[in-house]
Image (spheres, rainbow, N blue to C red):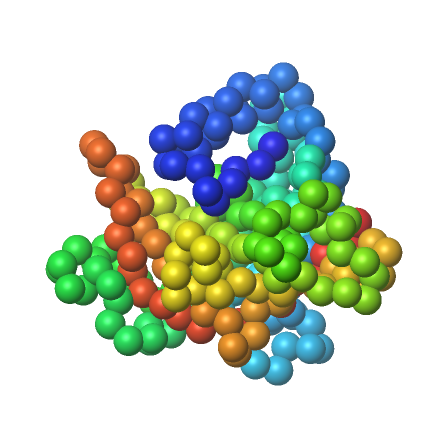
Length: 236
């Protein structure tokens, strides 16, 4: 089950509710558990301060849904994109740091900015983060990660959702998606072996932070552009 970045929020919330119903009956269809290892802070490759990083407990392993719990952790979903939910109660978190924004955030001009934090460690990333590899024309590859040949790379949309750290009814999303969020870029997915891929944002890539306030009518604010390097190795 996949939550696409192109869906309006009302549709996304409807899909989330449907996901809960399906999960109550067992594992969500079409998801293959994988292992995801962040570069920082725990690997020898971590020589810079990545802005998206793990909780210090090592690799994440996809845990299929049961009758009482939703999927948790990384999966290749039905289209073979990387689908990575985190749910409260499993004991796994992801860290997200926000350096100074690149210029004034768009919301500053209307005095509507909601961001009041500089760092988040969250166990609530749902709707799940999604990594969608693209072809040269910017369309999603038909078989996601499996469409990339060994030794080849593809630019990819990436979104990471997280709940408001202060408990407000706001869904926050880090978005690398230049088509829908101009000013941001894509990340890169490289297939380094038959069953191994690397997802990476480097110093040339830019993310936009977006907030959706869900009290009453959903209201979106554009909270700034950031350099947020990270690297995740995915093994099927």
